[in-house]
Length: 213
Image 1 (cartoon, helix red, strand yellow):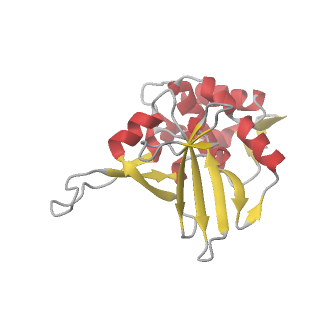
Image 2: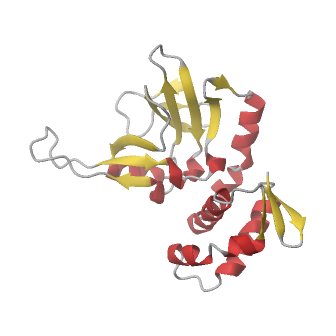
């Protein structure tokens, strides 16, 4: 990987082999679901661009030991994860400037791929496998991807490893608020579960039951 020039918006590193771009955020704090980032408008433009970046998040100790280091693949970054901050006060040097936060709680667990977790390095083969597992999302339209990400978030909220179709139907009213123009929410839930099953993200174990992979 190579460094981009300084002050390039929402991009720190570039991989010449795969042409992927990466933005790094690091801090000497405990891992948090809220990540402070730069200008709100610039961030929205970048995450919706054709060359939108992947994100690296890194936390380290007072002795500069890496505690957590994860990659957030670009297919998981949507507008809903970008939170607008209040404009800077009129007395500030950059009065009126509007920044943003990245809300990791809006990202499904499949999109948080740890290279280092709680100070322990994870196996490269496992990291690579996890990263490749959801690359199919990049080929989906924004609408189709939005549905799949919301279904993954619903699955995350189910504590048990195995779950039923009826349990997924319990999210119907919430999904209706997110997709108000869709009048066939249950049909759409079944469709998305089938896609995730075919891609090996979940397993179908029969009689309306599924298992998380």
